[in-house]
Length: 125
Image 1 (cartoon, rainbow, N blue to C red):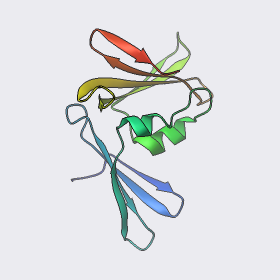
Image 2: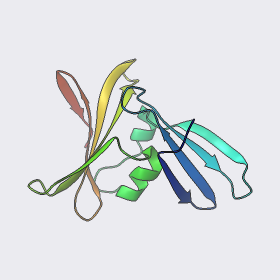
Image 3: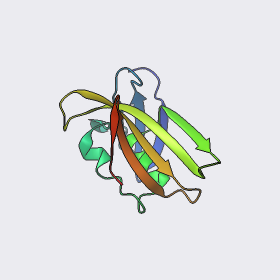
Image 4: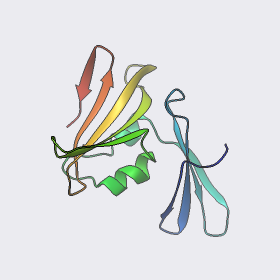
């Protein structure tokens, strides 16, 4: 899978994120135990994982653990927001490519989550 896009220590495991952004629309995480054993290999950019992001509750670090590094991360001072994006497929409407947008306030709390597709969007929070 090549070099990981990001490596994170989560509890006793080391997580290696492998991005296929933007056109692959997937983010794999290889979870490796402290003894070097592969615990799991998951594709994280899916509706079930996105549903775990709760506006006004989820922290930026938790989003990073759930989804891996964003395709883009931009600070918008005028909006007082950090905005992270990923490209994925929305399986509620099979195979539709969407842009996942997560907006966070300066305190690192998720404030809004959007799934945007060409010609319109769908707001979650």
